Amino acid sequence: MAAFNSGTNKIIDHLLTVFHALRTHSFRSDKSVQFDVAIKYLRSFFKLSESEAVILTSTIVNYYEFNEKPVSATMIADTCKCSPLIVLEFEDEFKSLVIKHLLEETVVDDPMTKATFYRIPQQVKQAILKCDKQYLKSLNGSKDESIILPEDIKEKDLFYMPSIDDEVKKLKSYLMPENLAGIRQRLVQQHMKEGITIMLYGAPGTGKTETVFQLAKATGRKVFYVDIGSTISCWHGGTEANVSKLFEKYTFLCKQAQEKNELLPVFLFNEADALFGKRLNPPIQGSEIDENHIQSVLLDKMEKQPGILITTTNMAGNFDEAFERRFLFKIQFEKPDMSVKKKIWKNKLAFLDDETAENLARTYEFSGGEIDNVVRKITMDEVLTGQKIKNTDVEKFCKSEKLVLEKRKTIGFSS
Image 1 (cartoon, helix red, strand yellow):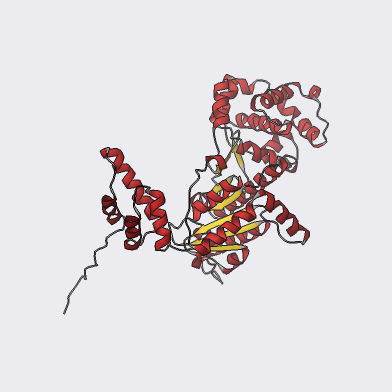
Image 2 (spheres, rainbow, N blue to C red):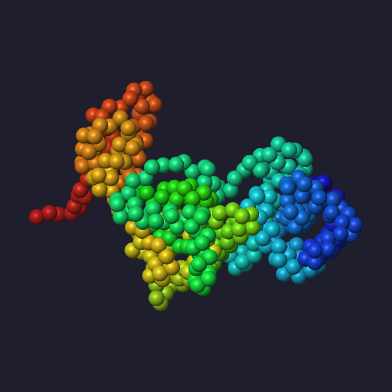
């Protein structure tokens, strides 16, 4: 704590000068020696741009000035005696520092405010105070769990019905880097939206989500994976704010990718029924008004998103028609027929002969996901017993996959 408080007042006195200098590209180190030392230290230590180092330094100063309370851009501006608009001009720097795990966004308790607040992560504090390169190495090695790199996606063979196979192959062709760049350029030239929106819908376990990951891997793209549950808030306006932040982060990721000459990432809304459901017209209660407003925000954000948005759903019938129109591609995933199921069985269990695989495909109305479950149970049993499963033993694992529901007994009198 003392390390941060030393010379804090002098640093604060010069913050406005530093912000002004950044905006006018006339940064002068001789005007704020201590602040300049802090900027240079953090910039070198965390390998930051000059403006990122300024934002991080000013946030740290405020964070410890206010006894480790979350810091907003307005608070920094008050300390600097400048307009919050000046600080907000560095929105990209704040987002970049969050993505690098050097700042943490935090949700405020007051449901009426829309301001974003930031904390200094514990590992950042430890890294700075101890000047410990091991902390820094650990920090740099940490990952944003919502960002999935193509090299971290395991390549898998997927088997589809012929009609689905054709559509997925066409989609893959569109998303190949050498093709998408030209497609987006042509869309812009013809005054059309360059963002691509895709809906994969159908029965559970038919490979919708895995298809997105395999498309991303095949085309060399990162996946920004959205956990829908984490966006739902019990506070008035909370879900709307969370959804807006997700799109802001994705837009920033796209901008960052273009600046670094990298490929546009995929924005994956998995099992998105909770957000894309039908709107009530007119809404009846307050909660329904909130839901309609959230969906209006979603529609607006979808229109403006600059990259590749893919949504998966098991219940496309629940989607509002306005959302359906926003999706450029809509691919229905059906449960596999017998020939496709046979291929899946043979792919998952290489020891199966043709006759057994065909019999399993004919006997059990399994989706690809359910076949995966059976294979996992077989693998676990082999590890436990140390014995390989035989063709004739596979069926006993299949029988335990489906729930057996007893008929409900009638309560009361019967004639």
